[in-house]
Amino acid sequence: MKGSDMSDDKQNKPAFFYGWLVLAACVLIGMTAAAQLTYGIYVKELIAEFHWNRTLTSSISSVHYFVYSLAAVLAGTIADRYRPRPLILVSAVLLGGGLLLCGLARNVWQMYLFFGIVAALGTSCCYCVPSSIVQRWFIEKRSVALGISMCGISIGSFVISLLVGYLIPHYGWRVGFFAEGAFLFSIMILASIFMAGNPEEKGLLPYGAEKIQTASLITNLNQNDVWTFKSLIANKYFIGCFANQFFTCISLIIMYTHFVANAEDMGIPKLAAAGALGMVGVISAAGRFQAGYLCERIGYKKGLILSCGLCLVAFLYLIFVRNLLMLYVFVIFYSLGYGGKAMALPGLTGEVFGTNSLGKILGLIAIAFGTGGFIGSVLGGWIFDQTDSYCLAFIAGAFFYLMAILSVAHIRPNPQPAAHVPAKQPKRI
Image (tube, rainbow, N blue to C red; front, top):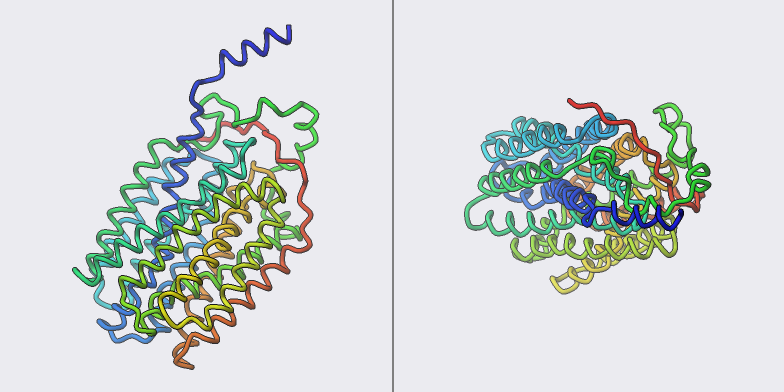
């Protein structure tokens, strides 16, 4: 009888698992984070045209991160309760439209509106939606799938860095915004075609669910409770994950917003500097992918701490960088750490809290990203305006990575992977 059941299961199992298409769509959505991470390429052009200082110019990015952090909570909650496709389509219009309007801006309030608010609303699903949805589709190979999905952020940063880095010297910064908006709008539309919020929408189980025993499912039911905002805020593990995201994002955005400007201050041409920034995306993609395999062996927590430690050392090294070769050494080591951290934190969060409320939880953690980004962007510009150097900004970045390590040291994740609990059918909107 058992043999017959197993034979029937094999016959009913589809030849191609639809979750791989969902994973590809998650990669495309992650690419839209490039709108946030490549703003620094425009900094010197905006300063030259409008005669702003670096504090004011970087504050536009700060407003973007703040608005994004609030919108991401709503996006994550919507992704948990409803089908994600309408959310992605609305985000595509806001992001593409906001960037196109940036290319028409004539003064600072327009940049605050178009990039700081409209485009920020469009990027609201770039992190919490793919990193939560992919964990619902995969139980077996979850770490690897999550690592692949997070590669979208890196790929997007690489493509946009090269695209904008080429267009600005040849056609101007306005054309750069036009092209970036059109490209990111297109890939979000493509992603919406294949997206499904959970396996039940397609009448499937998650990848590897058939291997989970009933006892394991019962053991892990508590991991899949529906978490409320009140219960999360009172949970010390959530506070640890939130703090880790906050501290790492201060440092990350100091680097991303001021990377090209710092390189140009050293005499490195813009295209070469933008290319180096793009390599952060390429190498961090490898870091995310490799971290998936590493975390399968040592766990998400240890992988997260190792990744943050590598970023800390890289920031201290950045103080001594004086030429393009040294800059690429920084890029290699920092990117591996940054990529590993970007994969390990949502994995640790899913391991601790389960997947039923993961969109909401990662949306809340995105507040830490936005708040950290708000501080990091303007802090780097302010330090430069006060000292005519980024040295103290890089020291601060290393310190914040130390704080990030300490913030998760107390977390004791469940050694069992979160079992699949069938989700309620999402509402159509």
